[in-house]
Length: 311
Image 1 (cartoon, helix red, strand yellow):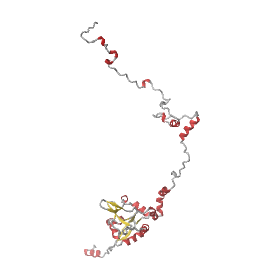
Image 2 (cartoon, helix red, strand yellow):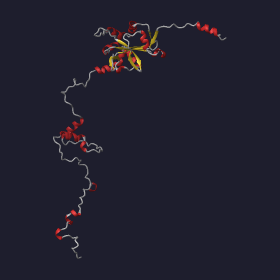
Image 3 (spheres, helix red, strand yellow):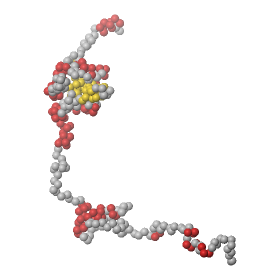
Image 4 (cartoon, rainbow, N blue to C red):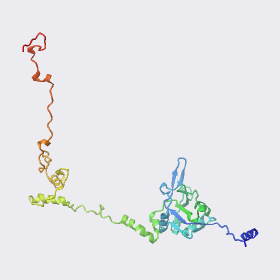
């Protein structure tokens, strides 16, 4: 039997609705150790993240940060937080999650010349696919809730970004890393701090440099004189034989170079006459300028009408 409309209403009213609480969850808390800097936009100087550190850390960065002690990741149960926390309560909750960085923050005393105490860390949020600093000196639980991410996407997309006011030295942040993180940094640290065998400080310049094998062979041939050596297999090459390694070494070791010597190998056959380039032709001379065709002026004008010829 289907329930009537009135019974349905009574049934719905009888359900227990969950109480509205101020608890929210985030999946991770990540600390950026790069510090902050003042950026001048032409009108005023504002405190911002360095331009080279505005990229949003991905999943691998967060997992590496967890090994290095600057992040905490709870992708199964989430990290509960309360939006009613004040700044001191928020610091206590974060210090329980990340004791190393927040213990370092507590030891920092950053005082300005006018006596105003600056906060040692700030909140950051995602804006236009970049990380930007939240303009809040001492953030509370409500500000963390507002900047953690959209509530409609689920708590696994809620992330908390914290930025140190000043850069944290690596020798300090390395103390927070777990023993497992040392395996990922061992190769780079041993390479950077290892002994370099090719350094100038360890090199002994008093030891003579041994010549190469080809140079030693050419020197042995020059010392032995006419010692017979096995004939080398000739390779086809379009280059002149002067570029052979042995000949080049002999030229380098000789006291002078004969610039008048021909660069053609003696084994090359002479060029036949029919293959030679013909000599240039003698320039033709205009007949009127030739001595053979010049007319003796004593004969007179041979083309004159008064002159008669008898054949």
